[in-house]
Image 1 (tube, chains in turn cyan, brown):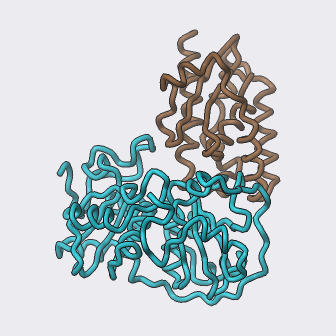
Image 2 (spheres, chains in turn cyan, purple):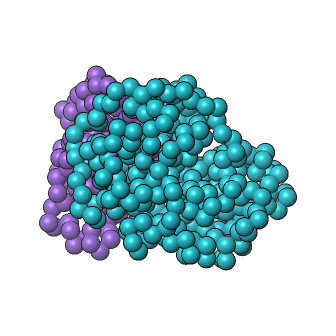
Image 3 (spheres, chains in turn red, orange):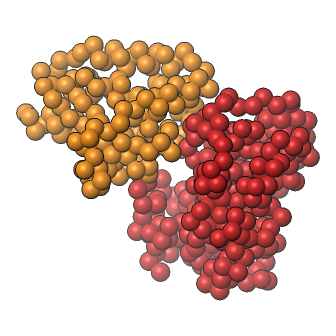
Length: 285
Length: 150
């Protein structure tokens, strides 16, 4: 597919990033599964924001507080009106997670570099091993979390009971209940396997092409509407996975590439649901 | 023989102390240095790797590892892609610390090693599973080798 295969105001090409990476009001942010990848080589102007050590609270299972988020942004030279462009490894899996967390705190101008590290590398563009650039502190006032994009377990339970739309983005084996995690990952973390009854299975990676860029609008419509049965008049759609990271990728696709109004990421996901006492679970469908 | 320890145990203790004295940023830098320094897999193991043998399946990254006991000393050889510097760095650290050690040294390595190295703090809890699996794999291979030779 082309470099930017899907029309969306939130998706920019590697060309665009190359042209704008030195703009004062643009901050490039790398977010990876492997924390050391940034240090090994990154886009020259990029800063690193880690989904785990930066964006999550290290004691309670939750995201960092509003004040800590403001401090994080300021320290990376991000102000409220900065355009933040995320990219990363694994088809932007973690970049989408970071974008979701930024949206949770109401950051307005967020973009994804289509194709992430992989596309940048395939283009033969430069990765540098320099220290993280030290930008002038930003001025940041964080907003209260926008819970219209985050689902909690009680809400998921009601959503499920009402028969509303849900997408399970884990691998087929996790969905059917044969496995507790993706193939080749340690099989632990939940006491029960299966999926939330009523959820359609669409593994997150189906949304991307081989070069890491998102599929075209038509292809995405075919997957999520024709195959998975989402409807344009769906009131709310909930996406979940194991810890809420893969589903933030699908959340991005549904909300910004397909334009659904109300899409929520259930970040408790299977490591919460599969451990809850008494909640409904379906297997081998 | 099995109960014999060696000065290699000290190597691991030295590394723990070195890591402990660093701040988080420098710990990550050191782990990246280890990743850079992992020796290439010896030629004689490559056919086995290409045939998919000795893969550490508990680890999501394609990691291939051979743990051998030769004349009472441990030898570890591994192949880890450069695109996975964290796993590569941790294995390289273990290769440095444990190559030439006795089986007893290796079996005495505590499961809390990652905490002792300050890597839980540096990398976050969720990244620990794959790394724990590698340490566990090395220890169980040593246990097996020791069992076989009696």
